[in-house]
Length: 159
Image 1 (tube, helix red, strand yellow):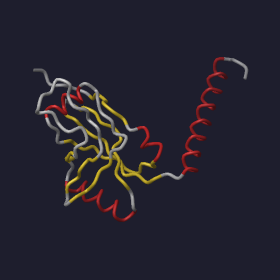
Image 2: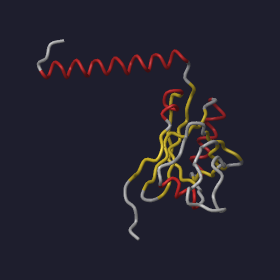
Image 3: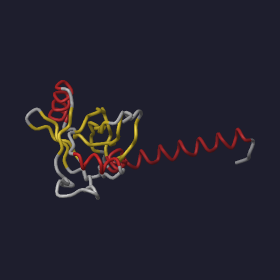
């Protein structure tokens, strides 16, 4: 069987980028059961309620929903079980130290296959206040209007 190459996105947590200011990102492997991998290959997962917890020097992913595999039997997995993350000791220590010092949280940002292996992008995040969210939306809108005006100008159209 040929080995997979490249990257395939399974799920993204767009809400996390809206609700949090992401300070740093890490790529982690996942310890999965066979039916979880098959369900992920079908492109089914939800990261919305997920978070990462460091417990006794190990990183655990909680609250991520990977639905049961439709063709599975009694060997199917629980949809919201906690899953172990595979990170280097240095990365785990860095994450734990920053979470304890600055009061940050660790949220999953995206779930994807990279060269046939399931990977999770996690981010050290700080919660945004409502005025931060409004400011981000205003900046995005201003940039979009600026790009549209430039495009109209380059095409020779009048405003």
